[in-house]
Length: 64
Length: 530
Image (cartoon, rainbow over all chains, first blue to last red; front, side, top):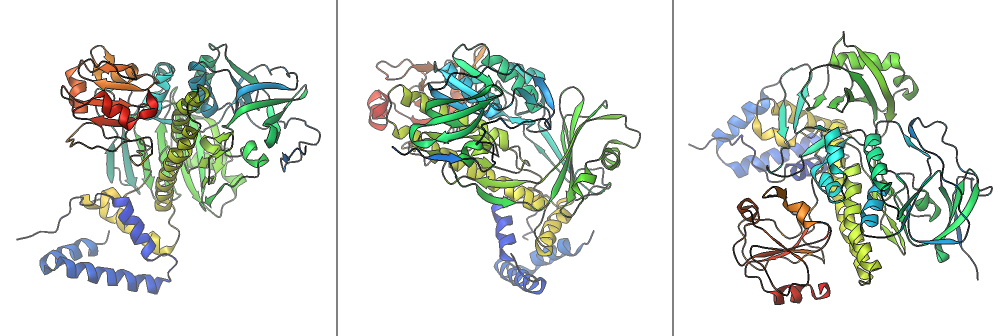
């Protein structure tokens, strides 16, 4: 059974971070929220496995 | 014939009097150099006597050139400027013979820890420990004024380097390459074949020539506090997000003589004058190092950071290096280290051209140094943006990273409290030849040569400051001197067998390598080297 990969998996993390910042650059909060959720949906679809998505949700929703 | 004068906008030129620097604290005073007679000529004039100008003077002076250095100050300024010097910088200083004293005086460090809030456990830890078995350490900390003192002492041993203290450029006639230099005894003119502008972020040369320096200011203020205290603490770089004593971030880093560098991110809308008063600084210091800490103020000041770059670093015979050419925010230690990279890159090219090489070689400094500057600006900008998010939206993304990083490994690479300076590669440069053979290890063309043990000595010290061919066996008929890798550790590091060879540039970057080397292959790729 596949598991959510929580080990570093990006060869250029700073590039990816900048892509994410640029996605919502100069956006109003509501627009940013909309875009971020569209990204979540696109990536969730790519992942495909609901178990993995659920594991990722668990990480995201555990508020410190 | 009309002469074109580019005047400084600062209004000092009409009476040609030197600006006074009474407000700048002095670390070490020198005797002002006497005024010279007008009309003299120097092949090379370096404007600026900080680490950039002094290192450049040493590199060119060591290669036999007569060099004049114009330092507007007749003293080494006190203050808190560059502190962290990278291995690459130490290798350059080693090549010119000053590294041993700098490393002996400095504090070696390689671990960095990032904390959040009042959590005593680090969120994240990094280790800069370079590839082992190299002569120089990964990073050292040393106050810039102590580095300058060592460089000045080394310069004094070269009769062909003329450092002029208290000599300030106030005019530049571009068509005759003539500088007007002001001193306390009056002004004089000096013409030059090459003017090397190492005069810092407020470059007079850049100003006099009306050149660009575009970029951005980061809307934030940082309190820099050098304090002296005695505590047993590891020589680690400690960084806090949301420190418990206030402010958005803070940094603690060790320097020699029990002096510590403390940075506090205070925000944009603050009273800058109030922030730097001891009664306002001390609670922050005590918050960081302990309420009962016994400490002494060495230096307090407030800075706003910028990233800027000249479009071109070469303007006819005027070449810009260091902060005069490009400016970065300090997180990542890319300012002085970037400047020394410029010096390392230019020096051998100027030397070659002065000794008859094609003038086109100088343009490759602009090609390569702008690549280095762009990478340094990119990394410094990203670090500063992570620490100072521009909007609520990007702050939420940043905080998501920090939330996740505590418990999840995948988030830690995103945490950016400074991407520490590392040598920039230029595999696409016109002076580099891409691999034609398959290599599984070794050092790629466009990378700096890695040091390796060679018996009791070291490979980089054997490479020196000129083109070298590195082989396993003697080669006859090479147009450049050869270095034989007679140590198995060095051969392994370079992935060498009996037939392979590396061609190394005078700045110790790998220019090319071959699996089945022949002299013909070298001549074909580098016809101008013979």
